[in-house]
Amino acid sequence: MISKIFGAVSGIFAPLLPAMAGSGILRGILILLTQLGVITEGSGTYVIWYTLSMSVFYFLPVLLAFSAGKRFGASPYLSALIGACLLYPDFINLMGEIGNGATTDFFGIPVVLMNYNSTVVPAILAVWAYSFLYKFLDDKIPETLKLVVLPAVSLIIMVPLTMMIIGPIGVYAGEGVAFVVNWVIDRSSVLAGILVGGGWSVLVSMGIHWAVNPIMINNIAQNTFDYICPFTFACNFGVIGVALGVFLKARNQKLKSFAASGVVTIALSAIIEPTLFGMLVKNKKLWGAQIIAGAAGGAFCGLTHVVCTAFVFGSVTTFPAFVSPDAMNFVYAMIAMLISTVVGAVLGFIFTGRDDQLA
Image 1 (cartoon, helix red, strand yellow):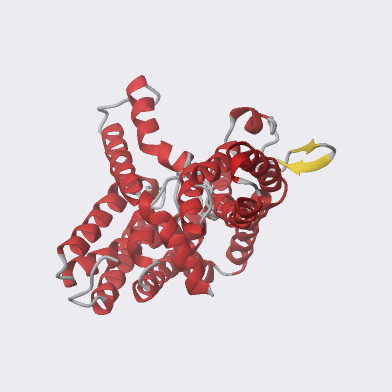
Image 2 (cartoon, rainbow, N blue to C red):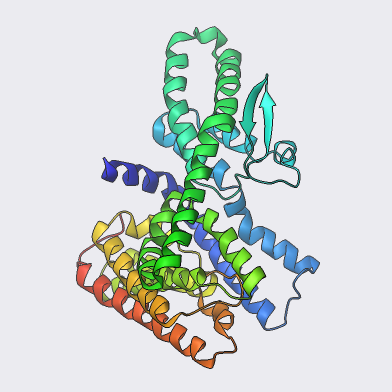
């Protein structure tokens, strides 16, 4: 069952990998140019470049809905429209200043409002449910009425259903993860490092990792530092290590090229999704290797109490976030990243067959 779920998710993401990988490279270049002072943050050039590098992630529910529609046998265009409704500005504005958890109503039925940009679970769940409705309607509605009746009935049922039930379930799942992370950190930083460093890629695969980000942002705002962010670095460098191991072992040029692009993309931009969905989800041994590598680096971060002084995503370009009044913080962080990378590379090399190909 679990294998089928991740197989479906991998198949849904596969068509999006080029867009995500390209956007990741562009995001990394923007970060680098901004740090070098070539581009000023907030300038027109910065905003335009940021837009072209991040739009694929902001509109992820639309793209995923389209891809999921094709995967589950529903109309991809109507599926995309369901995803687009979640991002419509007037709908988002209903939240006002309250944000996630604000409420409105639909014909007297309460609707819990959420911000769905960059989410994964709501769109995929909604289209999976819609696929059953679509097949039923396609079978029952006469051919002469399908052009109008099928889309109208689809939208009037699925959009409110998604906004009222399916969407909030996906978002609240993420907030539940955030609660658990905080609870574990309060009791054992090493255990938290193992669980978050090792499990972060699993959260990313389900799109519920975004719910943990506000905790990191709040920690930095209140305390000027955060313990969770280094664990996410450990995960990312575990992915880099595994991709490096695959690159060194594999003979297939397509697989080697994909692994190399993963190393560069993550090192520059911290975006692991192309490598995660394009290679790790499809190969459980490699994914297990990455989880072990991330857990190893995360454990060291927890043991040495590594912190980040800014909310960033884990890449080489964001290492300055480890600079703190404690000079050893940066040193311990580099050791942790090295541990994740080396463990990932060794295990990735071991678990890669020389004749493996990119599925």
